[in-house]
Image 1: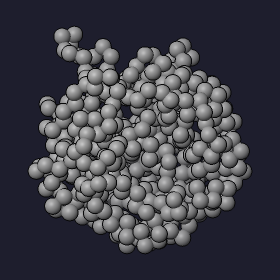
Image 2 (image 1 turned 90 degrees about the horizontal axis):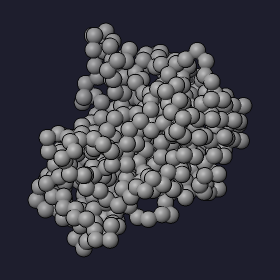
Image 3 (image 1 turned 120 degrees about the vertical axis):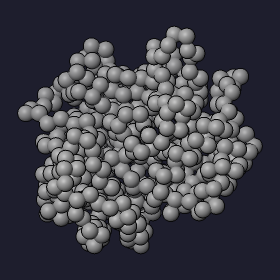
Length: 484
């Protein structure tokens, strides 16, 4: 999952919970001149850290279900793209005044189509602009069709130490339905090659809920994947997106629509099989064993800063280098040629920037944090809400208390989190929780302009979808997607 775009249902729930169903907060210059400036939440002073997402927008073909920000072109001027990725990374690191990068994720598109030289150049630029500690997680999304052993070895030499492979299915008929260019045999070969070069650090993506797919077929496919995979698996329910070939077939009646109860059954079947195989269900769509959690994705779910580089990438950071003191949501120009022109002229291709209001930040903390098994801790909540603790916001009678009594939610000394059963229903639980937050939110400005620890309302926070998100969906904190 990239800062690529998180689940539309969560974004819609957040918008609907605000008075008037408002969307993202106003950006510089937006709104009526007579409106008051949006309230802001200053973040702690530097030294600052952030994760970095790098978007490679090109693919050899567009899959039947895909509406990500990707482009199929006759030829790519990789030298020009490389120069722009390097320049934008340097510019945004300078503007953010980030001193240390906690993880790097190359997403797409199909970043395994880029040359190892491009990957190395970006990492060298990052290391030159900020501290990139030895051993930092550096992930590359790879397509089985561009993940042969020599190529993967080149990526490892360039600095990649973790792979996320878009297997999606190990059934050739399903792969054809999805419009994937690889076969099941090629997927197996790619995973085996990756595990040889990146042992313990190879993730695979799988899709379920395909038109016509049965629970038995899904279980058999997952069983085959468990015999092949390493220590991280991402499961994504197929989402039919407007404008895609697969959606047109289903909505036109040529293919069946999977029933909702079947989708829920598939998800619970997968969870049971993975947990039985020793995997920790640490986020709605992500499973890991032997401690192989995705550091990069955890930064999104824990509401940490991240910088998005490349066409269409999303970011969340404080632009201290421009005198900023509050977190902004940033989106880079999506079309590659226009993005390159902007980078060449002014150093970056930021198309849209929005100062996030206190409520919007808390909504993201809640909606993203509840995706994880650790949930929203008191400490992390207090960073964004110094005057309204979790107990005060969600411990009183209301939606959250009702969900606790029904066995979907837990509020205790560890914070606020879903039960395993509640995690599967998160999209249905969020609207009520967000409404309760909006009603109870009280965030007066701190006199010193800095966040304060959570008040003593309780003990001193935070997660299906892309193993590395970078940012295509509008109005959200780059997360969920079914990887390449």
